[in-house]
Image (cartoon, rainbow, N blue to C red):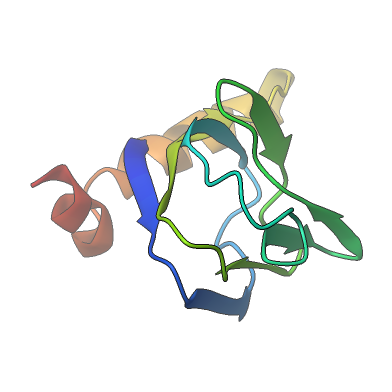
Length: 114
């Protein structure tokens, strides 16, 4: 699953948790405002850790931890957003692969495919 995610200036994505821990969330900074200095005005909180994005640099996190995003800068923040399959072995991998295959048919996933 991938998409380009833009967070407009003044936006705040409220604290939430991911729906499934079989994937890790990957963000690649594509268009990152440089002013004002992050992370106070532009950032992400995952659990009790704060971070921000840099153009051309990536971050990966487990979105099953509570996380939120804010943009109080003067420009839109754009990242490439990917779900990366969590590395597992044996039966857990088989179960994870089956679940992810079935999720392709979920109505929410179908909306993003359009």
